[in-house]
Amino acid sequence: MECHECGADAVHQELLPNFDTTIYGLPLTLKNAVKKLTCSNCGATRYRFPSNKDHMIEKSLAFARLQVPIILSGSEIRFLRNTLNMDQEAFCEQVMPGAQVSTLSRWENDKQRPGGFAELLLRSNIAALIAEDAPGMEYNPKFAVGMKLVEGEIGQIAMEQIKININHQIKEAWSLVA
Ligand SMILES: [Zn+2]
Image (cartoon, rainbow, N blue to C red; front, side, top):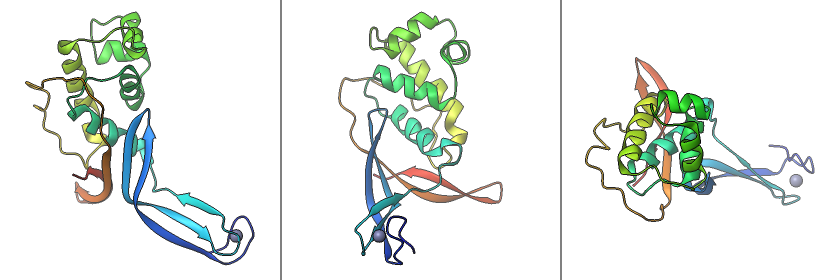
């Protein structure tokens, strides 16, 4: 493989067992998914990422986050809304009927918290809406029933790429690694 910096045919690639990053402040580890390309002539390095069609990485991460009972931060609520590709108005109409845009804005800016009841409804509805787009994640529609929300800091969320069979088609998806 040729180096994009020096042109030497000296690039070797290494599949990284762990690639750590953050998305909207959420700590994410991609396992065995990112390749590091290094040129042994000039030392240039770059990374090659797996394809992320339809933002499946973000949607799978969002789905995983919803199952963790640590109270959502404002930026996490914004991240979840973005994975649904909705503006604040659409989100209030379709996900949190009865919520005002001004209220959602305060949630997203950490000026106010949704409160337990609203947060559980929000989690339940978002999960239902993105489950199909995160097919590697196990979806139990009852996950938020009886969930006890707690304060805390979110730990690293580790995901790996798997192949799954959907309607006789093999698809790439992301699943959680314990
Ligand atoms: Zn080079």
